[in-house]
Length: 362
Ligand code: EPS
Image 1 (cartoon, rainbow, N blue to C red):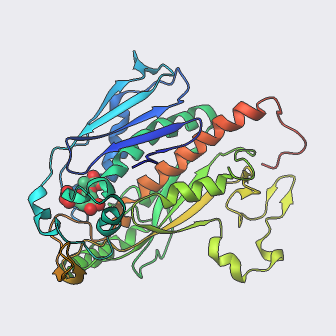
Image 2 (image 1 turned 90 degrees about the vertical axis):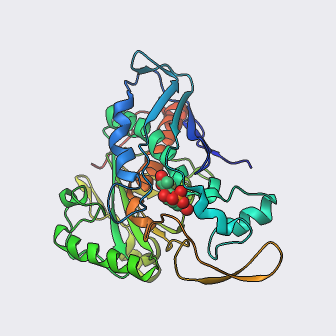
Image 3 (image 1 turned 180 degrees about the vertical axis):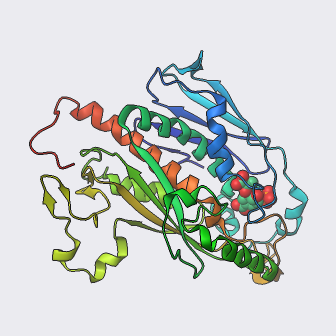
């Protein structure tokens, strides 16, 4: 299997399986001198982790990160940073029933068709467990972006099933286990997920992610567009089936006079473009939205086939998320942060001498 790495100057390679001994990553290209300690990983790892609320998978992983290299006396040295998290709460017997069959809607089938072998325990490499290391690596990217450029990346759950927020308040987002921007709706969401769990089914979700403070100029035409790399990075998240930048698919029914973001010397009048024009950041907030499919590991029996070529009925056991979107906000933030850091370094490498040219719209 190749393509376990991404990025050009800030590169991240992840490794490990859900029920293997550990998961990890190697980050290469991080500038030296960035202060970083293991305690700084805690917050984002907990925001993403299972078992932290009643509404997600009940697998309990401590997600304690070990820094194996690339940091000396609390600062990055410019050498590869290796991070490791040991798996401690695998329950592989839950997967005994799918060793020789395929969950409908799951990567079980395509991994088998591609490799002719798979680790069925917890989905192996296809498990959302892998996203832990993306979030860990992005702790470094988020910190560098904030310290070096004043860039902050944050996200929220924008839809769960048919439910959308009635109100929006960034302060509410971190106060509930759903990353939901309307505090008053949280009890209704709790009831929604409880009923979903009882029914044995799952539901899809939409997560929005926003980066504030991105200066103009990041992103490279033609094949290294900022929106192109963002779309690829966000689409690489488990269960993501759709990505929008700015107004995204709503642009289909807009007029040019409506979609364009008019400019005055004191600012843009709107941000339909999602902060990116021609693949290059405009200086406005970079905005993206992703849709995650309903979890395929559900308790409702479904038709499938087994390795012997017989029709079978599959019911998935295990400790699954009724809505993977509930934990996806920190993962979407992570992917956006790492793409932005990669492009910040790429812009610095080629265009640092260009400086500020002409009017710069705040
Ligand atoms: C997952 C299945 C569950 C989740 C897991 C993602 O694992 P298990 O089958 O071992 O109980 O708990 O998520 C994590 C462990 C994590 O850290 O995100 C899946 O099939 O993707």
